[in-house]
Figure (cartoon, rainbow, N blue to C red):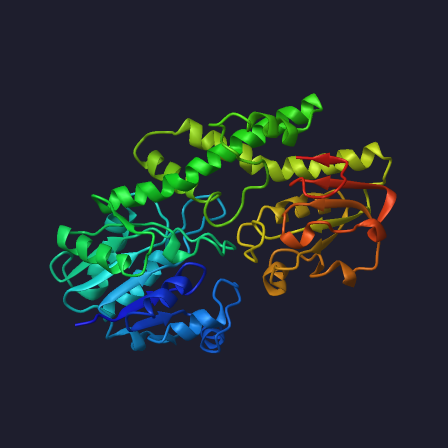
Length: 418
């Protein structure tokens, strides 16, 4: 018998998953946001991850905003956010609430798979007790769980879900094999069956912690190069001539993965009485970069005798990475806030960012095109290297003394690079 799959959460992770499963299995896509459901029913994806042809090919997929529609599913896959709270502690409330929601729907032999990135042991120690409590069913007798961490790369249209190897795991050997076979049926790149759920959780969280540390290293190199007065980009270009040099670039480290996951790992380490030094040091460096960028721009303005109070600054790019409209945990807004505290007047330019999302994060005006901006600026700060910014002509929007600070090294001319 073909099993029905329910996907809980239809964001950057859940929607691509629902689309792929919906090509082969009866699939129920669920989201608590009825507006999102209406858009998806009209084959519109505001994240720009899914095309109209993708929707059309997923013939077994339907979208729902009511839980009752999910009661006949046999497999539930949870793909909800796992952010940080204001104190940078893991916030697993979405996981807990999703577990509470689906638990009453569970019936004998159902499988619940978690894809949300979290700390090791979270699935078995935090989520399973909730499932047992609210379903009145017994774990590994009446229902089973698995963990298959998401590896979606927003904005990347080359490495889509089927082209990214998938880690799988399950709470019993038999269920682990079933889960692995399920994902193998949609992942052309293949799967890797981890020996345990905890290993799968740990593997995922260190993927992004490793990237965070590598970026922290080149960010620290950039800080040292700034003090030396030499070009960081040229230093990295020279170093990359060695065959095993890792080509990481300095910059603002935001988003929902790289800047979040290390805190999930250190949280669990602290619970165990171990205080990770290297991982924490990397976070300290990367968390300090928005402040450094803002202060560097202020120093560049002062060096050209530009009055800081009321200085008009154009910020190019506000999303957390290039060629992506996701503004979650973008560090650009921390730079903006710091500049505003100096008294600068900020204008934002981003062709991809969603205006309604940006409005939640700052009061600065957002434009999608340079053509819609008539004023000139004392400073230009390029934060995100969207393709649309390559070859951008700033002549009509700057003065002869204007400062151009390019964090990504994509502008033809600049006063400084990161």
